[in-house]
Length: 113
Length: 113
Picture 1 (tube, each protein chain N blue to C red):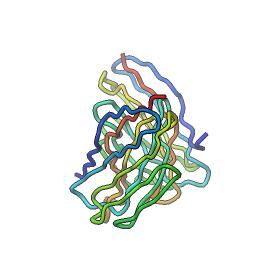
Picture 2 (cartoon, chains in turn cyan, brown):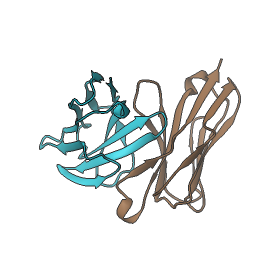
Picture 3 (tube, each protein chain N blue to C red):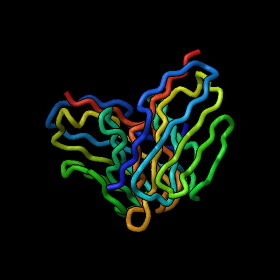
């Protein structure tokens, strides 16, 4: 157990739907990062939050949004889902704003049918 | 855009053999990390290298950061089936991009008994 908890582990949904992925960072970590992993693109950075505020943005689609709550857990919202959004979504956490090593969760496997 | 190219993409060897995987970029990174990912799990941090020319050893694994901080290598001595997994390198940018890790697509290593 890495200390980073992601739920759900698997999610199957239809095109056009909206889903919410949840992440609880390791105790004491203030930064949360979201990554998307697919076979052809590898791990792609989506967004980072540090202590409740957005710190950095990557290749995140406008249909996707995220937030970090006062208790530091984070949610990634994916809407108007398309077949191409099927992927593994990972959350990672680190202690500070500048990262010297992530701790990853086990991921959420999203399948859009 | 900072890109990391990993080679080879796939590697299948017999137990007891030695191997080296490479991570190359045209960009300079302030630090470079190596992760190992097993099926159904998130990547696990193996090592962080920070100084150009730095060499770090972790049991049978030897990591090297290039003098110019643009490339890195991972050498495994006497590989074992337990070393099987996806090996990912990730670079931390400098200046305004120092919050984001850029990942390579990985080397998928299979060690056959």
